[in-house]
Length: 233
Image 1: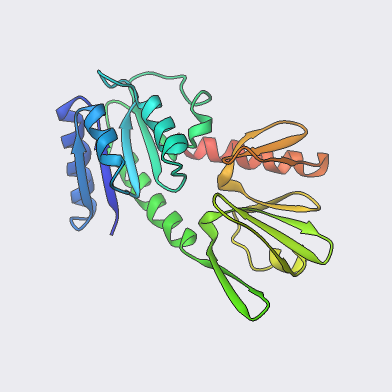
Image 2 (image 1 turned 30 degrees about the vertical axis):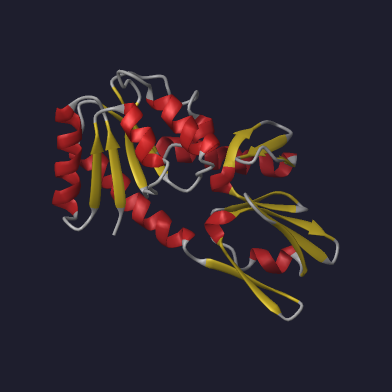
C-alpha cells in the first residue's frame, strides 16, 4: 500500500488527484493539504512514499518544500511529483530529483503513470545488499546506497549515514546490483538515482560527494539522464 500526500492550494485539484488515486487503488492512503505551512508541519513527523506537490502554492512555493524535504529532513527516498501550470521548471528542480512533472489541467493517465512507477521503484529499492565483515552479516537496502568504491582488495560502501569497508571486488559486486547502478569510473559504482548533477569530469551525488567520470562512461550516463527526463514528460 502506498502512503501519498497531495499539496495544492486549489481544492478542485487536490480532489481531482485524490479521486484518480482512489479509482486506481482504493486501499492507498491519501493525505490532502491546501496550505504549505500545514504540509511542512505534517512532513516533520510523517513519512510518505509519494507527494503530488504544486509549485505555485500561495503562502510558500513547492520548490521550497522540495528543498526542505531533501536538505533539511534529509529525505531522499520519498518520490515527488511537481504540479504546475507553467513550463520551464525542469532544469531548476534537478537537485530535488522529482519523479515527474504534471501540467495542469490534471490528466488521469499521468497520475496513474506516477502511481505505477512509484510502486515499481519501491519494490526495487526494498531489495537488500548483503556482505560479510568478519563473522557479521551486514544488510543494507539498495535504496540507501550512494556508491561503492574500489580500494584494492577492499570495497568501500557509502550511504547517507554510514561508511564501511569489507573484503570483496567491485567486479563481483556489480553482478548482484540492480540495473540503476552505473559505472562512471573503473573504481566506482554509483546509484543512478542519487545523481544530482553531471559534468564532463564528475558526478555530484545527493550527499554532495563528487565522483570522477571517464570519457568512456560520460555518453552512456548522459543518455540515461536524458531518457529519465523524457520519461517524466
